[in-house]
Image (cartoon, rainbow, N blue to C red; front, side, top):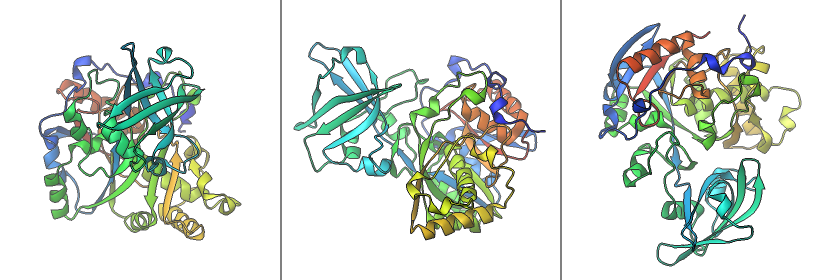
Length: 413
């Protein structure tokens, strides 16, 4: 019998990752990265530019079109000390990230603060940007693990997204131990990034180029886009011995009704998620559809709908085809007059999970003892060890700027 993921020990999902195997910089050409292909226990190798040749023509690739924002704001005090404000997520007064990004003149944001001990109570941080724009930051409240900051700027016609683009810096992952430079503004971003809101890139998509996308089209491989805004919680280490004591981070998803209807019609195809964020979005749609069928759910306010980390395991006894679940979700959206579904998902995909929509995953190589590695293990079973051993033995580059893989499911625990 499959055990509940609550009982998993994170120590069983570790491996030795030498520091020199972590890619500090991207390759000169995005699609020159190495590609490991795993299917039915076998491993082969190629380059990302050859990815279309490894996909059946009846495939649907789903990408995450979120855009990384320049979430790091640096303020220098008169004494010379630097205080860094890292914008994590908007205050609860805003309906979603897109709404918060469109605010003009002032915004409230939950932030991490580097050098917080140097920031005296009541002190206003100030700086001039772009020649004549005044930027100010004021601490409104201290939360558990973060601060609530009011950020304001003098140009009332400028949105917060535009302000960050002008004044902020790209937030590279903590394991890339160097300062971001100008090249990161372009390379730590997919070529199809569209919706401002992430503080980390959906890195599986970093390997795609116009040439690869054109080759997919020529092979009649369909592509579609969802939005999941990646939060800093994606790097949150699992510090508890068992998963029952780990709180999964929540992230915003933004999917329109047309995409869900199209997905429902394409369920007979090989649906492949480009990145763990796309996969989490797709699988969350199934469980949202299932929850819509519960008594009283139709009376639930749309803005309160979400997926918690244990929902898939608490509801998995309700075995329904994905077509029915997605149909129920579409009916619920129509009843609530929703063209878009904007909500949070806290879904934890780990061994013990049954995939409902996704057949394959394109992804980079993830940190030891991370929830992303648990997701990979849920898809390929214990063979994740074989895959990662092969990558380490054959000089693959790891993590965000590293190489990647095409993993086909079917070998779950």
